Length: 213
Image 1: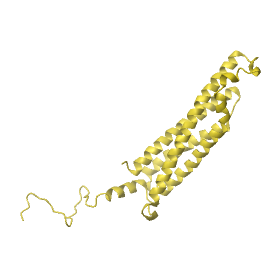
Image 2: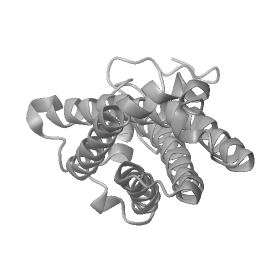
Image 3: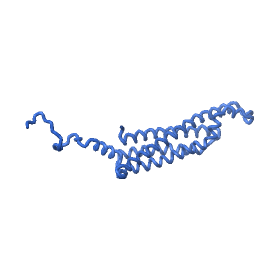
Image 4: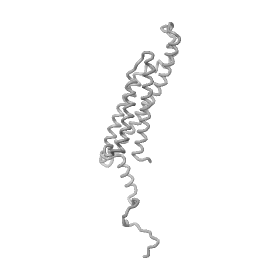
């Protein structure tokens, strides 16, 4: 089984990828929809969540290896919990406030057949259809990555809380690297570190082919 640190690094990497995708889609949708005079605060917030997540995870990884004393399990759990709140808000708000948009996505061609668009230039109609269809594809991807990131952060936060509560809540001030080291050293009570000058262990026969009783 992967170590606690490696599990969190894998989770961090996937969440960071989700953050990059959400940031990219949000920025692209904001750019393209402004061409037809449409703006949405939902995508602005999603872009903030993606950017903040990427910065937070990169900073956390740097602290883990540069200043391990700050990367305690309680601090990691707190940061993961904060990101969990941001991603939950982003996923719920995007799902809620784009429900009408997703309904329109199913009837884009019918929408532009309405009488209100009869006198509109054909080029303008074609551009609007292209923008809306592209936005609809991006919206589906946005929702998928938002909920994936939320689920991963739920699992990560729960796992960190579980680690902190082990051994009578004594591990909150430890870090993941120390936890992995302790878990490994407790795995085999007779394990002898390489290069150790330790003497014979009681109850263990020292097999030496040159030894004569």
